[in-house]
Every structure is written in C-alpha cells, then in structure tokens.
Length: 302
Image 1 (spheres, rainbow, N blue to C red):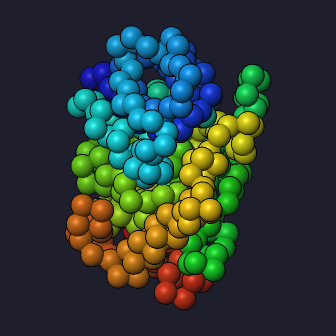
Image 2: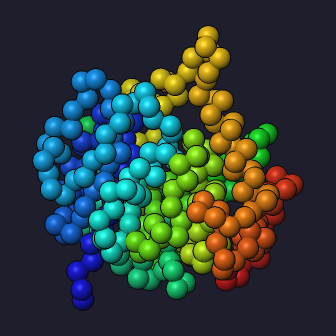
C-alpha cells in the first residue's frame, strides 16, 4: 500500500500546551516522518517554540496576538502552509494522542461510509502533566439552540464501539478533530470571518453540501484539554469596553454570518456546495434552523 502523508493544521493562541501537543503528536505517530504540521502561532512577547524551532516537519506562520481575528481566521491561516500532503487533520493546540493515532485514523477513514468520508467528533478530556486516561470514543449529538440561533452539541459515548469496526455516521463536525482526504481543503476551506461559535455547524453544512459524509471514529485517537487550566484565550485579550470594543461584538457579527448561511444558503468560497442542499442536511440531522428546533431524524443515507 502506498505510504500516505498527513498535513496537521493547528491554530495556537498564546498556548503553553502547543509544544507538548506537537511533541506528543510526533512521539505517538506510527509514521512520524509522513506527518507535517502547519501552525498559526499567535504569540505574545516571550513566547517560545523551543524544540519545534528548526524541525523540518513543522511550518509556522507567526502573528502578534493583538492582530489575531479569531479561530476562523487562524484556521484559515494554517491552510496557507499546506504542502501537498495526501490527508488533512484539523486539530487544536491542546491535544494528546493515542499510540499510532495516524494509522488508526487512516484505517477508520478506509472503513467510513460514503465516497468522500470525513471523520470528526469530540474528544475526551485530559489534564496537563498527566497521561490521558483510557476513554470510550465519543460522538456528537444535538443539545440546544441558544437565543441567537446557534445550535450547541454535547458528547455521546459510543456504547457499542467494541463491536463496531466502522465509524458511526453523524453528519456533525468538531473543530478539534477533523480528518479527510486533503481535497477537503479546496472544497471546504476555513471561513476566516467566523470568530468562534458557528465554526462547526457551518463546516458541517458546507461539507454535507459538497458531498462529504461525516462519521465519528469508533476508536479514541486523541484527547482534548477542556476548560482554561490557566491558558489565555482570545477573548481575555480582545476586550476593551471603555473604548466601545469587546470580543462579543465580533462574536455577534460572526453569528449573524452563520445564521445567514443557514437560512439563506448561497454558493461561494465560504458558501454551500453543489451536491446537496441545506434542506437535505436538516432532514438528515433533524436540525431545523428557521424554527430553532430539533426533531429526531429517520435513519437513512444522506
């Protein structure tokens, strides 16, 4: 079988977990030489990449953290570092990895349904400076709509994962674990205008309309750092009420963009694709965007 290379896209905002994340990524990979990491490093004075500096497997675009425009912008910046690899893994700068995670993802992708499979789901949590605890793989399910019309999701353990070799179709994506053929980058590039919330639902809708079938892997391949744990987040720095500017102003503008795509879908670089409709996505997932409600879908192929 031909060796498969992987491009790993990581946005990092003043994150002390970035270096441990990338070191663990390479240490746990079955084939570290086939992996290349692209980082959008939003740094503050004194931040240091340490052992990542000079590693030929790591490409970095640097930005002063004060010029950062949010997660969508940072994820879009990482795509500028793509170098022609076969597969694309989108993740975060505060992750830990299972042994041979790369081999497991490739195997799961080969078992996933659809002509254009995409693996995505939430990851169980870890605590810094401790080995991640064994955890069952998770899938995503709908939780609630908030007053601005944003759908929120929650983790749902895959109870029968031991009996399943193949991933579980969900149609839903999570930003810290997305794995697909690298052609996904051209069809569903990250929208730089998304500040924070809305990244995942718009990506899910756009991917679906481009013909991608999203499934949750039935093997735990990585862990995510949930909660702050002392990390500085974008909204900690970008908040100046006295000057009439707060991070939430950017968030509300972003959410209006999200709602516009969900309610008035149109083609374009950050719009919907030509293969399926948003109405078909709603029927498949049970999400009803205009009414801000959910109804249990009838299981069927997308």
